[in-house]
Image 1 (cartoon, rainbow, N blue to C red):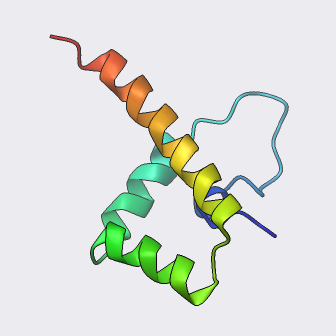
Image 2 (cartoon, rainbow, N blue to C red; image 1 turned 135 degrees about the vertical axis):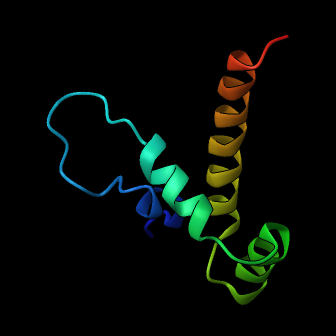
Amino acid sequence: MPNPFREAMGANQAQTGSTRNLAPNLLQFIQGFKGNPIEEVQGKLQSGEWSQEQYKEVRKAAEQVAQKMMGFFRW
């Protein structure tokens, strides 16, 4: 089953052998997002659109992004 988070970030696009910079895709996704993210995730889990495994993947990826971002914002 495809990962919706990775699809939204363009992970399924062909890569040129170098590391992709997902920041522009992430910013575009964030700017276009409407609604409450917690409610959206809960709705996807309850409807069966996302499996528990997909949720865990997305959560792990989000935690990794948050940790990297905190590295940029050290006081």
